[in-house]
Image 1 (cartoon, rainbow, N blue to C red):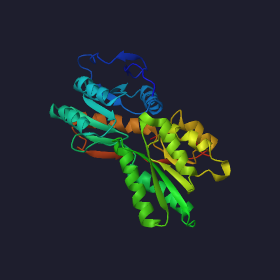
Image 2 (image 1 turned 90 degrees about the horizontal axis):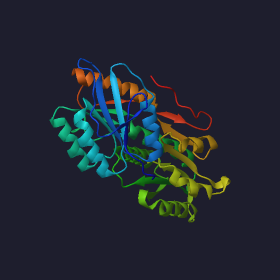
Image 3 (image 1 turned 30 degrees about the horizontal axis):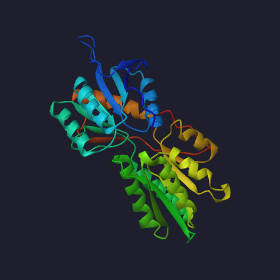
Image 4 (image 1 turned 180 degrees about the vertical axis):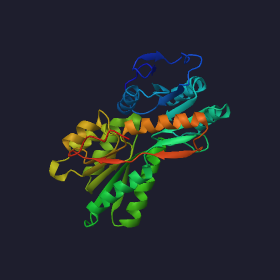
Length: 309
């Protein structure tokens, strides 16, 4: 992953240094939301661009990219106390939960964005139903493979503590094991620090004498799979189901490398999140409530998501 300086982006797209405090007119009713996005670079950029493109009355978003676990913790401490609501798209780790609990203790609301966090430390979750996404992937793959007694589905997963990935895997295994018990599953674990080795492992699994009929990638790390998939003859290429629309996955979807891509409209997520911000500030939002955004299933024949609510 390329490293670049962390910046804050206001609603007009202009950068601000992360150390600056927010300042607003004395009687402004504008709600201030600082947001940290800790994800792979292509998806983080996609999310930040969507936030910077929104201009909603009464809500001021300030978004910053994080490139490490330590930077995420530092940004939570630095930016969280300068805002009315703090939003995070990041890992659901014990260290993160402790840092977020510190914000809740001083009356700052915490919003989980696209990937859920411990309900004990967040006020609301805005995003898709990731367990339902995993169940949908299992249904598609199960129906495609159920008549082939030799077929195997490859599950691409990771040890990184993103709740969205965990929920997708739980949903996938529950439906595949319960409704399609004859479909065998092999697990391929990817490691961000060993992308080359991960590609080799995937290629070996796909070409190692197994009849891999489908791949489900819970992580959305689609660039890791591209090299391995390109080595497979088109006539033997497995069905590929994954998540997250961004600059990496969009051309793979349009080319047919990705068969089905599950996404949520970022416009819809941001608009709903902005309404929740106002409700949280006014005390009208139920604590720990999840605001679910519909999941869309894209293919090369419908590669554009709906614009939102």
